[in-house]
Length: 500
Image (cartoon, rainbow, N blue to C red; front, side, top):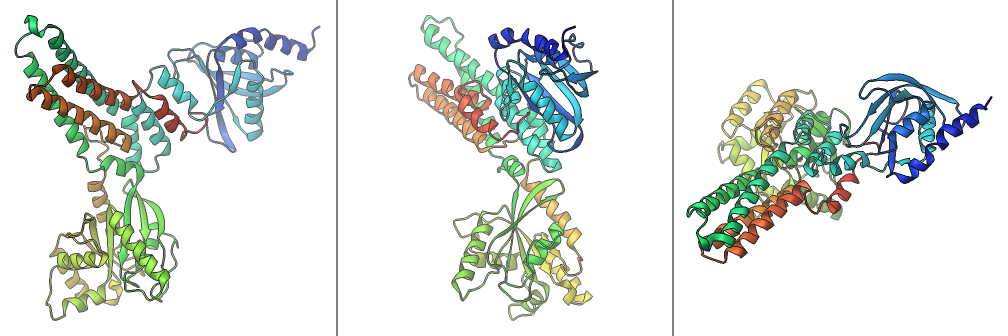
């Protein structure tokens, strides 16, 4: 009788020659690390079938795309590793377009480690690199670069709105739009080149070039509308920058703690406690927010606080939304001053001027939400008066008490409305730009299309004008990965986890 170890070495040895002749086959843990109920280990590549046979003792492959339960053994000595659920996914009908298999094992760290060691012992197999499964899907034509980026965003999504936007991109909403643009560019280019080759022989309808220029003009307008989105898609992907600003002791740090619902910032009655920028992330109505607490704005006496004030102004200037915090009792005194009772918008404008963010400056004025804190220190009648005064302006104001929590839920609701205006609507029919790379390529394509139109209108050389269409099509091709994709992919896949 043949010993078990020799029998198993025979099973594996019969696979060696084929494994060496084939392209690389990779494997990785695709589920999360750590102790869990079930762990998913994926294998993709031409030796996937060999790996499945090696770990099941040479048994035949299961039926395609049907889950079966089998024992897994070590290919080195035949030791039982686990009882697992197996899936055999032959290419090209798989995620990567290659032969694939999945091993759904028990999720204990020792079990996962043993199965990974067993796969490493199979000839022709090697551990996957970050993003290698998705990279193979791209090379197989299953995904374009925008879908790959959408998949990366989906894995990184932390809020509901981020998830919705990422799902749409991963499902190909951007791919289809850019595909239509590229097809339209190639049609325009084909007509232009036909005029170059046959125009003098009058084999082409006279109005064909006019129709081509009109189509190019519509395409350029479509690209321009796509670019004029106010960075809403990028903002939703990366997070809305919200800065809390105001005078010392207005309650900025208390407001930060109230919104994030933890003691993230030190709160003290002594003015000037906060001297540096303090960031915290939170989810507001499904929108990602990076909330920044800042130093109180005043003429500081020492160098450290002056630097804090400088950073506070810089953070407010770069913010998408400023929460301008003021003390309710002080605002009441201001309203009763010699200047009368100006509107809330006038008050906000004056406070923004103190921040160096007035409309007359070079920096654009960010959207501003006025927050009147410490309403617990005023009477009910005074609070009602402040509410009427807030409504006299743009309406983007809230009365809160960070001490008692009064008004904070209403502020969060108003903040959610502001974020909805600042971010892309994930359910809108037109997909949004989500990365600066997209913006640069679309802007380049639009510029080349406009140059084509201008050169034709000026009666320039048609061959040179047609080159502009070719360059525009290349810009869209680089955007989707049809051309020049390797450098882009190296950057994109470096952010993927191993096993995806």
